[in-house]
Length: 312
Image 1: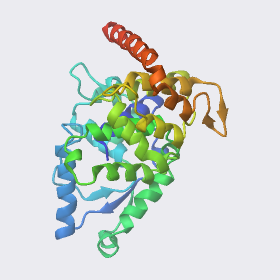
Image 2: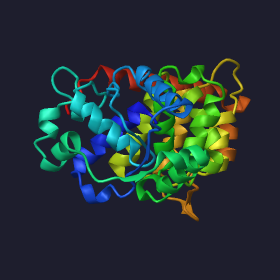
Image 3: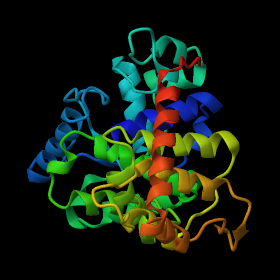
Image 4: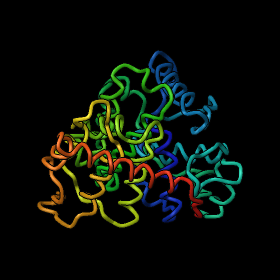
């Protein structure tokens, strides 16, 4: 679970309006009443809460279930009830906390936050007898989620940027494999090359807050231009090396991606305005001067944009 995604999903729900009928994958496992299995689950969740930096509600000690589906939604509902902070501007009060009063003006959201909703509960003995069952069930529940299965490449990149921001995650062994597996479990179409998207996000996404990924995602959503780029393109974006040593040019890469994203040449569902060969070409020595000039222009444009007052 990504704490940032809990709040991002909640912002989407708040925008379109909550509907309890849409919570069809609300399935949870009973928490074992005692023993090692119970301690492992409690320890894992406490660790997740601790490193969320206040984005998840603290455990009360009265928890009885472990969500398999609908986890991000219920996590935010608990956070809203606890009145924690949120990174989503549309959900904030004047202090940057979840504006619970505004959200609960909607009767359905108030029910979600203060009462709850119907769940299918799996006995804890199943978890004890069949350790792999929960993982299979979680993948199946995510696969049945149409929103998840239609995740675009940029939404996957945004998901990765949230994971990278997650405090403590990178201290875990094989954390990259874990976040890639999470995309596979969501049945995202780009799962086979999600490792390239993660590599791009890490190296060229715009720093710790991945502001360039967020910018591209905003462009895609604002203008409704979100064609598939494909494995070859993301591989070129993530692995191409510019001729001038020490220059990675994340702004130039962003410009190339946006050009392909907004182009009108789409074949077999994949954008063909630019190709892998175009990325390779601008990395050559012959284009070094032009690339440097473009980078300076983009840097100035970004500085101007960041200095402007944005009214929401």
